[in-house]
Length: 154
Image (cartoon, rainbow, N blue to C red; front, side):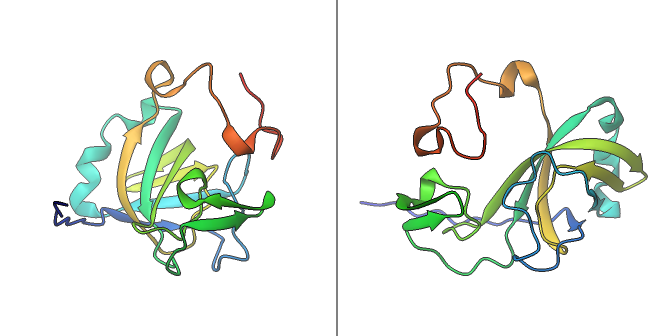
């Protein structure tokens, strides 16, 4: 018997970016130079203490303009159908986004970052430090993405 769990998420901030609709947003933020602002709500500002010491952070956010989902989709990098969970499509059962971004500056409750592809107004759910010793993996398989986007194995 399938057990269902109730989840309750609370936005801790909002993302401000130059991308106002999906057509404007890059497919991924990697290598992007635009500066985006991550506004952490004042009630959570104290949680940013010491964040300036990290060059990169992980942002978790809600794809608020998700359009439902299909379990098999095509992507901008391939015309063949792939399983949804082998893609980074924003259209998902739980439309969560995740980006590793470079921290450029902090001004009180505002983080200026590079490498983000989220739309303007995207709700921010969490921030975590990027820790290479934990987060970087070796001997990685790229599945159907092998050779796409200039992605190379380490």
